[in-house]
Length: 363
Image (cartoon, rainbow, N blue to C red):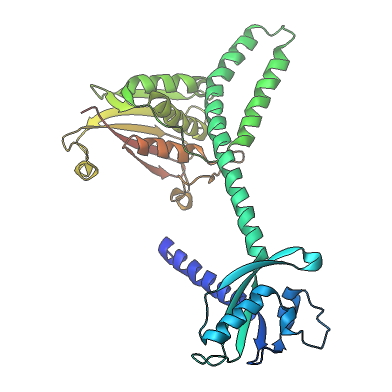
């Protein structure tokens, strides 16, 4: 089922739920032409705070003022007035919000009886307030997530450097303390991570190969630990593009870390660049049709991706890793799109995965 179908289905469900709420759960009051209450349902008693076991009907004058007003208006005009809302004290339930509507028993005839329907909006109002609160919390979480993801990427280089220092100073008393605290920071940041887009990019002229080289240096220790082989072939020349080098580095580091994690012992990571023909759809986006593109290919000989997971690969929070956050590829894709590029993936279980990124070159 596609998204529009799901949306339509959801809309129908919501409409049906609304009908149930507004009619089957309504409190109904029937006031005759002489302004006498002749019917008062149990739900109406509950909403008005009347004892359910009370057999006698209340006098019209004891009903809440908004109810009296809408009855008088409907009776005088013979037409259904606009719906309205009001609040009232309901004993132990505190202040409640009620939706009020009325119709004449004999439409078009003045001074006829009136049917009044009451609906409790209190739960809906409280839910709305709670949703507003959750929305504010989500925005706060997004801010924290952006900061956390940036810190985590920076820790890749910082942790590597600290590990090297600690290996050279094994006898130092603070070695284990420092190692433990760095790991603790990494764990805290990981727990903070929620999906969010990257910060606002600052575009300038960037060397694609310099960004790739710097990104590869950050993951080089992980490659060494796995006895993996790195094969690079940078053929794009010139390699200048308009972009944000920090954002692009974040995208490439995410892809490199995923590739390294997928590699087995003695695996191989291939990173290549080349210049290719302009994008045929560039004119539709307002770009120069003659603008060439860079193709960056990142290929590993790792475990590959299961076919059933391919369609969800770039979804936020989707991950197959026991401790994964499911954020890296989602953020990577957003960065590439912000740079007017595209990213695609091919994979075969047991044979590895290939990511291809297309980025427009400097005009």
